Amino acid sequence: MKKEWPLWEVFVRSKNGLEHRHFGSLHAADAEMAMANARDVYTRRNEGVSIWVVESKHIVASNPENNGELFEPAKDKAYRHPTFYDLPDDVKHM
Amino acid sequence: MNSSLYKYILGVADNCLILGQRLGELCGHGPNLETDIACTNISLDLFGQVRSYYQYAAKVAGDNRTEDDIAMLRPEREYVNVLLVEQPNTDFAFTIVRQFLFDVYHYLFLNELQKSKDETLHAIARKSSKEVSYHLRFSSDWIKRLGDGTEESHNKMQNAFNELWKYTDELFHLTDADLDMISQGIAVDTRGLKGEYYSIITEVIEEAKLKTPDLKYFQKGGKLGVHTEHFGYLLSELQYMQRAYPKMQW
Image (cartoon, rainbow over all chains, first blue to last red):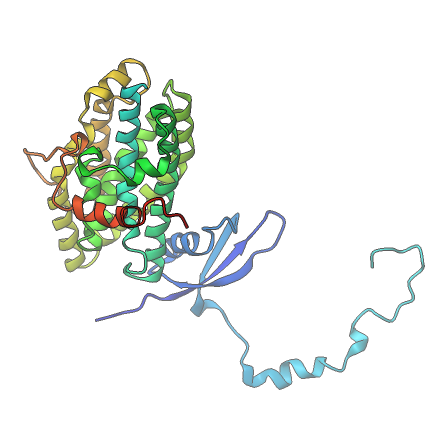
């Protein structure tokens, strides 16, 4: 009898000019309800100016089992960071 | 003191206080986490509005009472909310139908109150009307979902409409204080809202595949302080702390 509504992920932009950030998730029967619920659950303390919701099943996530091949090779590639340049003294804020 | 104005403010404010209290009862008991928060958000919107009204009423009364005294320390017969808002949260259908029947009225009412010659009422109405637009959107949405949902949800919604319908007419009754304030351009003549009220409601009811109840006899009394049997219980819970521990603060 008890059927759960599908899960949705909520992204909120807290100020114009900033990007949407993942705020959390919630249950809702459809997109319209997800939007209403997101407004009530995540922006009730004036947290946002824009909301995105997406059903969680549409998010493709990397598999933690593949972390070795996905991420470890990047660990010892310090030369991929642009830290090997001598900056002229006149260049500030870098 | 301007006693008509004082009474008029209470007539407007008490609806918000009592409906807010009813919705607040759902805190932690809503059908699910999301709806629970939505209902308590609406409750807090109403309590916010009611504070502005009672602060103004306290000023008008000018007898050293505060907004809290007005909210918490009146006896039952001095509360002048309509009977609709004190009806219990029998189930979610009752909660949402009660909300919807009040929201439509509240929305139309605040639009008109923004034309009031009284600057404070005008300002409170302007601030509150955005909140109430959202309340109306929320409750209409649920009316349509559940009315046009499963057979069980449809029946529960129809039952709630049938039971609560008899409390709608009172929204448009006017007390002597109301009439006095209307003549001064301060109050809303709610008689003028009645047609639009029922037409908006009928439209949503039809979209929700429900039937508009056909009723000839309506209940009244709240606006004169004569309440239904549910009200004493609501009030004793609302007032308990102030009665048991007078002047307690937290």
